[in-house]
Image (cartoon, rainbow, N blue to C red; front, side):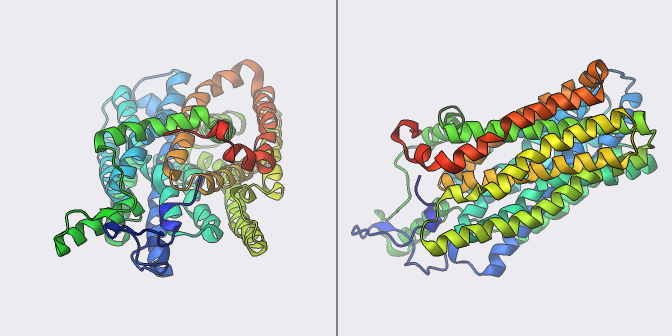
Length: 480
């Protein structure tokens, strides 16, 4: 798959009209930026990547109030008004990823951030449930930008041996955001009503968007080199100067290819397909819990609207623990292999991380389901959700870092393919949650999900041992 453009050194190029980095230490190369500049970009990116996923479940504790406000009683609509936002995460990347590879990361961040704020305000002033659902979907489409191209931004500026720590900080948003949101929203909804959830999202989204305008800089090497070539053409008067990474394909055709690329990777790359299915099932299970926890703890334990938000803390604590452990361990393992001179992407999938992560989800689901059904003390099912949080973060972060390392130049497309599938599962699987619990109970309902999680455990183990062979095989090379 090769290294990313920004990881490459000066090319062995004899054509004087070809523009590339001025040697290994060129300060214009994002890989050579100062640590301060790199972490400024990662910090504002992480902040935005926390806000947009947070919006997915922020008002989950207020769903019963929303349904009462609009005189609706359907369980399906109650789940869909939460999960439709995640459906937007499935559609947005199909356009955002290819546009980022045409015009760079920064324009997409800024435009999508603005649209996210506009659509979130529209949610706050919605006059009926249909309007709320429509603008939730559009906000999800716009809000998917940091999740879709954030991994590509990190691949642009961080060397492989330091990437996992940055990925863990950036990646906490998609997992931790949906957990933190309901904890705060439970009290907010009870005090101010559900509309204030969206006003708060718009305020924080606007604040972090301004920080991104101030601190974030373009990181995508092909765009930076094209700007450099344009500057040199103007300065030298030589119209033949061109970027080393310039494409001879017209922009319209390149855009079409870029739109198709994530889907081709999803359908024809076994690595992207199976890893995306693994993440998607775990992600769908997580969002099924997010959309039903309010009803489970209000019904089984008689929690109030404000207290029910605290029931999401189990997932959050599990994820925070996992993030701290994973960020340190993953980079340490890669550095050990790098010192031996045998570094490869598959080292992002060590058994010490993938096996416990895979096992934690079914354990958590069995514990959550049966203790909630038998109305064991409320701390027991919350501990169960903590295991689910551990498993989800271990799975998502190891696999996303692996995909970035394995498909560096097209990391945004690989992550987009992953995001599309997992968002479809995250939007649709929760729709069956309340009906599943009503028909077979919390115990067997969550046990079914647990058995599904058990079936997925071998997937990352398979690629730990056979990933390199599959990745380098001509049979499985995806032609773009």
